[in-house]
Length: 563
Image 1 (cartoon, rainbow, N blue to C red):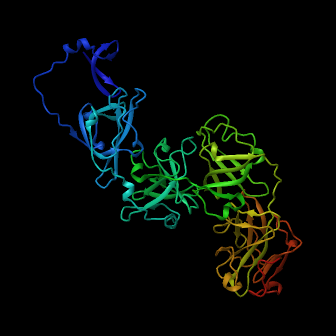
Image 2 (image 1 turned 180 degrees about the horizontal axis):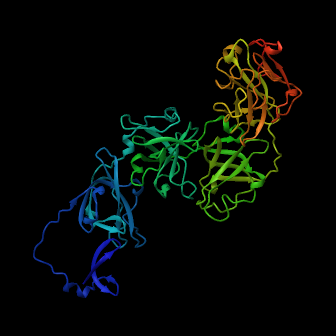
Image 3 (image 1 turned 180 degrees about the vertical axis):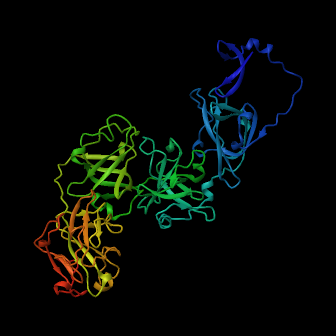
């Protein structure tokens, strides 16, 4: 006889060369001798989390266990073949909380292979085995499965306690620790899938199957997530002991990692993401690219119509034709200045395929990064390019600063007026307004981000200080204390690519005493000027100020929204 390890377990058998083989049936009597003693074997009761190498090939008993939800309706093995099958057994706490799991290994030659798994809860007795680094349990017959209690569904004992809007309100720009004192449970619906590999190590859930108000992404250290959480599954997120931060522009849940968060570990994530086993059809929100910025749809499933690749992306792959490097491709709608990026994981099954060159709609998960919106599809079926590619005319933005106001009688009524002189709706994703105080060469304060704003053709957008509404009896588009220009300060309008589109004043020069000083007055763009100018030209402006003897008081000397 010889002894050795085989895939993690000790085995005794007959040595044939360098391997241990079965003992021939005719030789068994030489090695096995049956005594006259017959005793009752008492299995060792253990928790799955307590299992260790000293227990391999022992008879153990696991209490308060049940088969995982995904196994319900299955048989121990397969009736039509002799393949061995693994069935997941879950061990629970007294209040139905997930504790751990182990595979029940069933031989395809067993005489109970085609019997259906029981749906209750109770005790399983079996021989502990080890397959390389993974423990598994082998029962002797179905009498080893004693399920006499009603099945435990944790989801039935949980109820949502916090909404997406409340979670969003909790986030103040820094890491949120949910702690343990208050029970936070979020109800959502899975909208991502890693079947094709484009989503990896994260699950995205939104708060409704249709017309959601928002969603979260949960980072998990797990592969084949779709086997546990399919698109449309209703889940409950137990947020206690977890953390929340903003990553790539969206709220993200996970474990703490350095100064932000990372993945929930492989053994833990099912403790926090409870699948109710109810599945629904998710209805993506249909939206055009021009309307996208005025809606807060990040981390939700959307269907954007009228999209195609920009001209210089045509003929390219989703990422690259070789390798596993991730990439983005730019999409546009003809006649619309704004664009959106589609992001593809370099390990997605379709990453090296050619991107469709037609025109149509794309369904995907929307998110934002660096003030730019991006979309991520789950598979090729999310792209519906049924129309031919269009030759889009180049759309040049014509957003101008047309008025800067510094009323003598109200510093809090100061405002800046922007005007769309073009014939197309302009969506200001990634645009910002910079301010330079007292001749500074560097931007003063934090610029105003204009993402989410749009200007219709031949229409205005007003950015004003906090007293504007009460003085002018009008509601500005943006209210901010950033508008403090007092006559000698510069304002600069910058697009999403960092290009200066328009400017008033000379950067690096204090306007006091200059020809363009508008102290206690205003600067008005002349009506014959219909193009923005990245180089300041005083001839395009009419300036009023106290130094010129033309003081301006609000509201009578101003007419915001009129040119």
